[in-house]
Image (cartoon, rainbow, N blue to C red; front, side):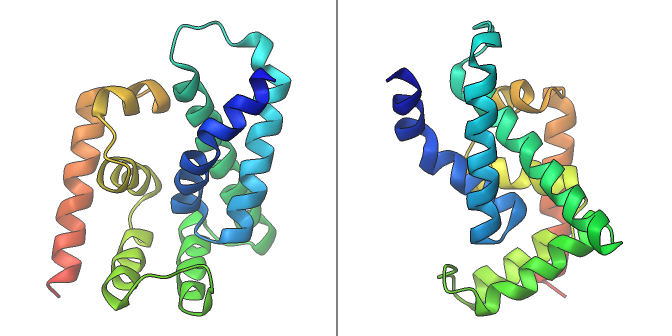
Length: 161
């Protein structure tokens, strides 16, 4: 019963977090399912040192990054090349309802280094506080602020090109 509540409470938020990382709807569904399997298998190890959602978010992030790495290795390309390929597919994705500007933004975000892309998505789209990101990514707040600043600068430069 408690696990079902976790699923209902956090499924949508985790899905969109994962979707921002892996881009494709079906891949996001697969990663979300793997995330909940990991949560179920490891819930007894959760010590309560952080919020349950923070813990689940970390699992979702790690599962997403592992998924990207595995897919990229299978094709013999870098994670960044895999992401760029996925963004190109957004134009024909029936689950993507963004306009031309949103598509352009996604293409630009795809060119960012992995950490900057992750931090930008968490801060810009999910409006997550740096302190929460720090817990999830196990990185200093200062490092996250720097990553976000660099990402924003790169995005602005590319938009203005």
